[in-house]
Image (cartoon, rainbow, N blue to C red):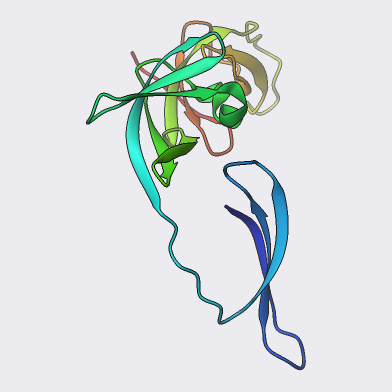
Length: 168
């Protein structure tokens, strides 16, 4: 996966692209430079919609929505999405050469607030104050003062930010 790239056009010579990449299988970071006209063969990637079922002794189990086949991931391979795991939710699983290598959560998730201090009126000057809230998945994020325990909120999984409170 390309994390960062920079297109460089020096005064003389051909342009090139400097990249910073992460190996999706081993997790290692790697920097490489390519000529700007270089071509690559497409990788054997496949995306499948799978439902998160449960966690059992460090393994997180997902089920394919079409074939009902189950796949288990260990905690290390899920470190970026572990805060967004919710049972019965559908996730996109990335397969490379018929082997699962990555999990992507939905863009927005609705999670219940399990613990948050009460918001005190008068704490704000313009109404923009926030407080920490612990969600059902274990994620802790900043929410507005009007959010209470038991509320369901919408969270953007790309940056872990509060979007809105969801009516039940």
